[in-house]
Length: 366
Image (cartoon, rainbow, N blue to C red; front, side, top):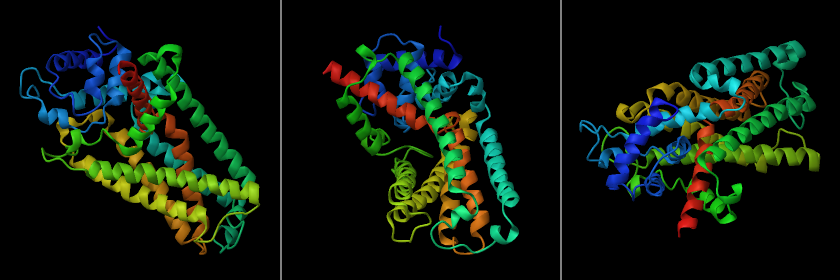
C-alpha cells in the first residue's frame, strides 16, 4: 500500500506497463520504469514528474479504456504529479495553496495589484501618478528604486529558498545517486533535454491533445513561454547590472539590450500562454486531471498578465498611462514571485530534477 490512492493506482499501471513494454520508445518514463521491479512512493512521484503528458502512450496502449485493465497513464501520472507538489512543498503549512490554486493565485494577484495601485496613490500626488515622465529614472519618480529593489528581492529570495527546500525533499524521496549528488554530465544532459523539450514529442511524431492526430503545437507554445520567461529574466538581470555597475537608470531606449530582451520575452509570454490556454481548452478530457485545471489556468494567466502589462508599459511609458501601468505590472510580477513555490511553476523545476535523475540512471546503467 502507498501513501495515497492515486499512488496505488500508479503502481498498478506501472506493473501492467512493465509486463508489456510496448511504449518503451515513446519517452523517458518507460525506460525509467523498466529499471525497477517494485515502486516506492518516491519512485512513483519520480516517474510522474518525468512524464511530459504527451498522451502518446494513451493512444498507443492496447489496454487503455474501454479495456477492462483501464490503463490511463497520462491522467494517472498527472494526478500523482499534482499531489506531489503539495507533498514536497515548503513550508508544509502552505501546501494547502495547491488545493484551490486557481482561486489562491487570483486573490493574490488581485491583492498585489490593488496594493501597488493604492501605494502609488498614497505616495504620489495625482499630477505625479498620471503625469508624463521621461528619461532615466522616470519609473523611480513613482516608486523609489531602493524600495522597489528591497521588496522584490525579498519576494524573489523567499521563492528561491522555498523552491530549494521543496526540491531537496523531492530529491531525497526519489532516491538520489550514490553520494547524494548528480554528476556534471547528467546535469548537462538534463539541461539539453529540458531546453529541447525532448520528451514532449510523442516518440517523434508530436503530442496528442484533442484527438488521435499528433501535433507539435503544445511543444511550440511551451517553447515560446519558457524562453519568453528566460528572456524577461535576462532583461531584468542586465538592467540590474546597468544600474549598479554602469550607473544607468531605467527606462532605457528601445534599442538597448534590456529592452530588446524584454520585448522578445514579452512577446513570448503573450503568444505562448494564449496557445497553451487554447490547447488546454481543447484537450481530451480523458488525459486531463480536472482537479488541477485551476492551477494550470491560473499559472498561464499570471504569465500572460506579466507579459501583457510589461509590453503595454513599454509602449505607453511616455504617456500619462505609465503610472497606473507600472503599478499593474509590478503587482503582477510580485504575485508571480510569491506564488512560484505554490503553483504550476514548480512543474518545470521538478521535471528538470527528474530529468537529472534519469540521465544519471542511464549513465550508471550504460
